[in-house]
Image 1 (cartoon, rainbow, N blue to C red):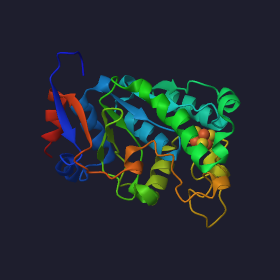
Image 2: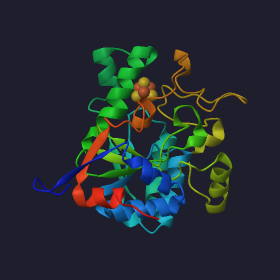
Image 3: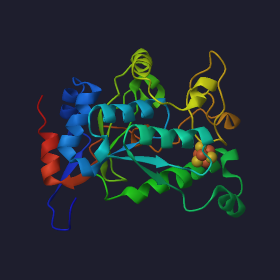
Amino acid sequence: MSNSTTQLTKITAEQLEDVNAKLEKLTPHQIIRWACESVGSGRIAVLSAMQEAGCILCHMVKESGLSGKMDVIFVDTGVNFPETLETAARVSDAYGLNLVTLKPERTMAEQTAEEGVLYLSKDGQKRCCHLRKKVPLRQIIGKYDALLVSLRRGSGGKRSDVPVLAVDSELNLLRIHPIVLMTDEQMDEYLAAHKVIINPLHAQGYPTVSCNRCTTPVLPGEDDRAGRWRHLEHEDKYCNINPTDRKRVRDNSDFVELASETAVKILNFEI
Ligand code: SF4
């Protein structure tokens, strides 16, 4: 949205169903290009925690010839593994993306001094993830109309029915998932074919990587997310910063308001 006089149009999750059916017929690169053309290159960014899928997405943005214009948003909780921070720097540098690092208001030491060691209890973990992952993202409200995110249905669990296009009413932007349909095999093939830079922790027994306080390697045969919050014996192995993880998608009460010109381009998309 450019200024206070810009005309706005509401887009609901329900309205996106037709668009999503069409987008599912496109390749990831085609979805990325469509997203940039529809939203405008200055109003879209990549959001990545610098895990394998996010690194592949960054590489695809470069392959689409769009990286020079695009920010990659990375939330540094202050307790990331050094390998993750190095991956963020290497990926953004190699793929020509502008790394935008968002941080929580307090350091982990300050938070612990004031509230205790939150991540050691189930309720505390929810608050800690809220403070260190979700709240920092609010700094981008108003800056973008869409984020490219690397969620995949093949990850299973809460991701098994994630749509290509979803609304994020809290950040008032669209979440676009270009690699939502890529299988594990296709991910492996893409990694090998393009020698994508990925977090070295994946090769050290960590299928997924988050904060160093709450991520451990997994044993052979364990679920990929078994190493997340292992100390809490959680059934819900998600931090819920992705709106599609925390509530029903395709719900009509979920909406964003975008510049009418942008909304029309999105809703009138034809293959
Ligand atoms: S993953 Fe753990 S340390 Fe990181 S924000 Fe969540 S609870 Fe806190």
